[in-house]
Image 1 (cartoon, rainbow, N blue to C red):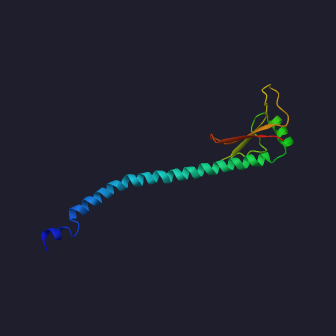
Image 2: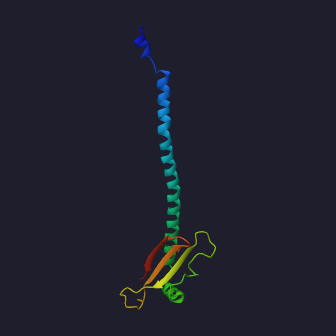
Image 3: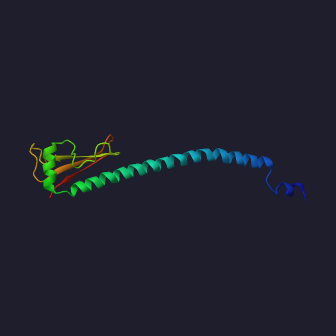
Length: 133
């Protein structure tokens, strides 16, 4: 067997060492990118859960009778509703605010339309809708 055939039969120690070093260097940034993606997935899950809780509270408020919502909107005068909000001290407390709605901007609330705002206490997460016939 000639020296040339012997040499091409496998990898030398130096070639294996260089390939392993290159693989290790490429693996570090890949793992760091994966770590960020995993962390982002956890944040997205938390935000999605918070959004679904807001939508659930909004739907439960909209299921109430319009007359009851109008009375509460007038009684609270734009302040948070104790009747519809989560109790104080609840983690992720959802605060509901009802406001008589003025569609035409003449400073006179329109009968039969109530603006419903739901927000998570101490955050900027909020959702709004109108309740009407």
